[in-house]
Length: 111
Image (cartoon, rainbow, N blue to C red; front, top):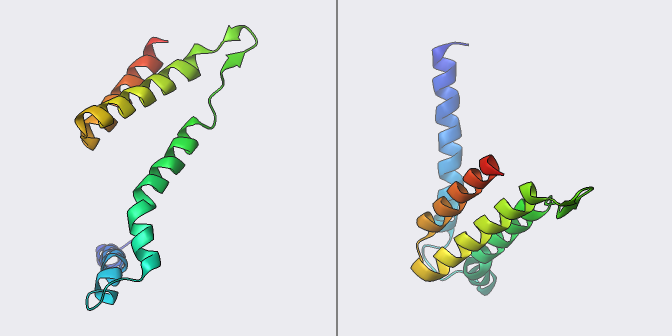
């Protein structure tokens, strides 16, 4: 592919993403958003986290043919509780997510 085609494609993608992000601000800049939009704004972070939680924990197996299956259960729930505890204690999202991810990866390598 030619460099000019790649540059044009990247520019078009950036323009589309910018347009999608700017659309709500342009649409609601002169007036207050409708009640439905305000409800969605209020609850969408919680809904997204709930969906991610279900997605991450859906394939965990608690037992195998030999008894307790530690490799899937312990790292996932340990990281979940550490992330939840740090978020409630420190209220720092970056610290909570980073700590939970590091703990999960370490426990996957150890167990």
